[in-house]
Length: 182
Image (cartoon, rainbow, N blue to C red; front, side, top):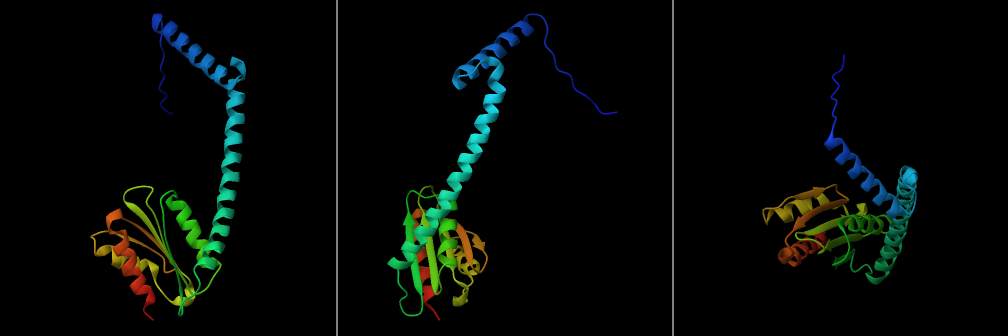
């Protein structure tokens, strides 16, 4: 046998609960512009529309990251034996940075990406490098952040971490120094 918990109200509390439930249902029906009996159906429709809109938004974000990466590759040509794309975004989230870095790395060679967003404090940092450079981004970022008593890491191709905004330029300078070593 399984235990079953039963919760109930009676008397005046039942009447108060019923009125509150009716008020909530009426408010939801008004907000959804449907009758009270159609609220559940309207909520299901809204959830489906929200899911579809999120999927479409994600697809557009992925396309935007692809175009953004292509533009950045043109703006940052290979100098010497590698290209370093170093950018700080005040209005992008960490998810977009990871997506952009992966697009930069996937669509080029000899490329290092140093990306950060200052949308939040601490600043989010994403570091990436194409495989042909033989760099281990996870180790490089972990070592650079350890200087500040911070942690971060990832795979050889891409890593992420956080650092106070005040130290971001120093971190990027240190990483660029490591990227430029043969």
